[in-house]
Amino acid sequence: MIKFKSKTENYKSPRADRGFFPSPYTVAYAAEVTPGLPQLKAKFRTVYEVEGEVFEIETSEKVFDATYIETTILNENDEPEEIMAFLMRGGQYNEERIHEWGQSDFQRAIQYFNPESIWTGLTLADTPFKQLAIDWIKNVIQVEGLALKVNFEYDVEAHKTALLKSEEFESTSKKKK
Image 1 (cartoon, rainbow, N blue to C red):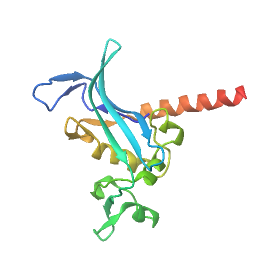
Image 2 (tube, rainbow, N blue to C red):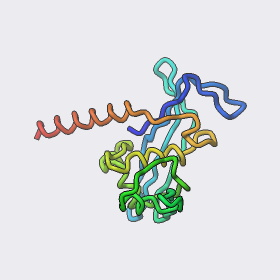
Image 3 (cartoon, rainbow, N blue to C red):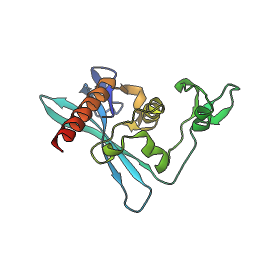
Image 4 (spheres, helix red, strand yellow):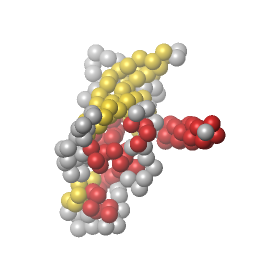
């Protein structure tokens, strides 16, 4: 599960007419692949719960298609360099060195997610680029007009729980065969 939780117990909406929300979180809750086209649409929603009932604050989506805009990082010479080229030649990733966040295309984006999760609710693949994917999401996805990172942080425990459930499912599926 891709989940970002509020940095504070009571999230204050930046919109003057909205007020406070108790412990909201943002999740990637669905994805759509367009048949015949290289297009993945990742859907996010920000919600909060009261007595077991879920209330939606906002939804957003990000489309990955044939469009690619470089994400650049400042290299050892303080010059912008395309992030994957930098990492492939042995550069060390550091979010603070990101020069500009770009836009992944379909082919790059699908590498960041567990393939089976595209149909069941997105989860991030455990790859060397996982932290880059987390940082990209928190810098590019917006909640109420602000980058996710302003009021939310990645929920590592939700990811661990999703992995455990996935492993349990796989082990019981293998036993049934």
